[in-house]
Amino acid sequence: MLKASSRYLISFCISSLPLCALQAQTREEILHYDFWGRYDTAYVDTLRSFSQTCINVSKLPPKFYKLIQLVEIGIDSPSIDTISPEIKNFTKLESLSLTKSKIRSLPPERRHLQRLKNLNLGCNQLDSLPSEIGELQNLEHLDLFRNNITSLPSSIRNLKKLKRLNLIENPISQEERKRIRRLLPKCDIRFEY
Image 1: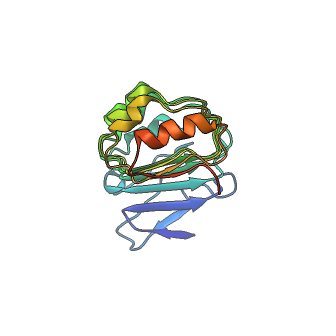
Image 2: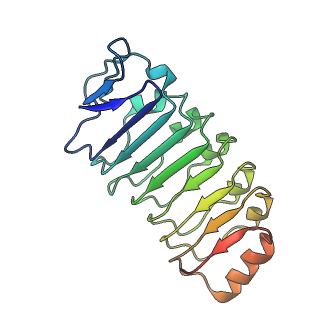
């Protein structure tokens, strides 16, 4: 059994270890959360962090989007290809990492993530970002490592708090790199290792 507090739920390779294989720190804080079957939980409404690797599902179950207190989400899944519009439920979210997937686009509902500071969409299949990305005013770190992005929208200049932008292993021309640097003069931008 893995241990988890009432605020953090972390496990690895759901295909071999189900989420319900967690045990809380104390007997009073029983936390069992199996999205793909049972739903037996206490303190889930206080869960702040969710992290999973190697999830073997093509989309997250509807129950996941009821964890509206989440501040941090970290998921890597080679099967996930879309982000549900239900992402809008996570209005308290500050860090979102959806990596090693097949995501091709971002839903318009991401504009509800106004507290978002860290967005990691590395190792996906994005070929562009929507112009609404500039609405994420609190974004400080944007990781787009290993995608198919060739350019960024001009609205990226609205991300005044952006400190780091990772564009390594994207087919971005030298001319576009210069344009991005002009749009974000105070940002640490990485195009190469």
